[in-house]
View 1 (cartoon, rainbow, N blue to C red):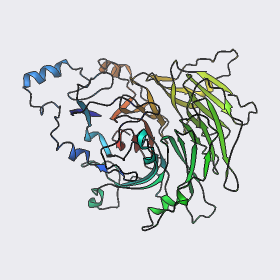
View 2: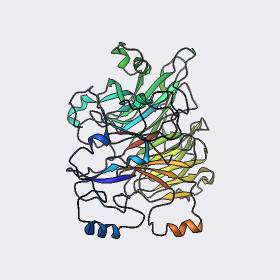
View 3: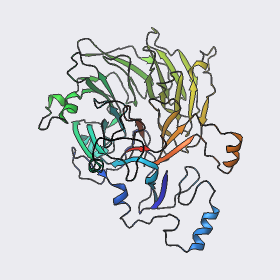
View 4: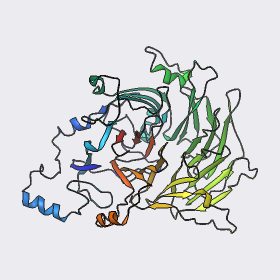
Length: 494
């Protein structure tokens, strides 16, 4: 959870679509990476006011009167989305006792889309300090488009919170666990801002060699660039290695789209590489990697949406099926074997834009969606039937939450727990939810004073301009979220 602190600058508004915030307060160099920030040392040593009962310097009577006016569930200094209002000049600081791990880092320009790359360090890792690899695309200011880059990053030295014992074991010394985090990066020049980026790995035929790691980057230029970042990842463990200009060039450029787009996904069931890309004209193209290592884009697009394709995702269990979300308020399910290139199912699930979707990998008939009105919902695809009339059918979700008051910008199921969902929203928060929570009658009485806070809500993490999040597939409970800066964290509740 978060606590309130005062700051001289007011919060920026939520970022939507392709808009870009101002540059970070770092050296203005295209390849200059940011640094991790020791949030609990730097911030609390500043002269910022800490608004917390007992330490704010106000008379006891004044403070006690304010506390009495607050709802019993909020507690002094606790921020609750949609209920607690920040005063002018206030921002939020995290409560360190609620995290197992928390690190923040900034980059020269915001990276509002990223993906996590699987590594060879093992699954179900609980050893600290942790290491992870990510890819991200920048959104530089319009006047400095040449600053844009695809960033391949290694994050290491990610330690536990001070005093956080947990049940994790480590073979490292305590001194190693307290080491400073390290950010290493390789930069691939781009001439356009990144709208969405996704990574894909193809197993090597030679067991002694690493998998081939590809990225697909949808840019504002309407082009989609596919890069092979295998040498960039390998260079982190090969001191002195040099990336050649040829290795920075895309292995394929998809020029089929006539409008920019935000929808990209690689199929996990096609190891060689099968890619979907959707644009603001409502057009979806499929690109397939050939046996020779090249790429072919099918010239027959998938058409059906009346407006922009906001997100797209392959089915985790059926190799020929994918779903798409659109600003026309629908989710459509497609079968790539269809000669008509028309959707097999169309469901009108919102009166506003459907921005994001996520397919559960544990229970593959469950689909989560997030819309522009702040509502996120869970759908049982077994209940969706083809419509017999001209208008799309409006189904009933099995769960729906109207907690966030701004647009949902990212939603993702936990990789191994089909009841846990992470959500990012334009109200500058990332929330964690447990759909398995149900209150009995006695518990309902105890929480009667908690209005508009669903019992399924586990945790609220403050993230300025929250845009995209991903669970780490190999470090249980670890989340990476991006917005104005990156947050890498794990809570004590997951």
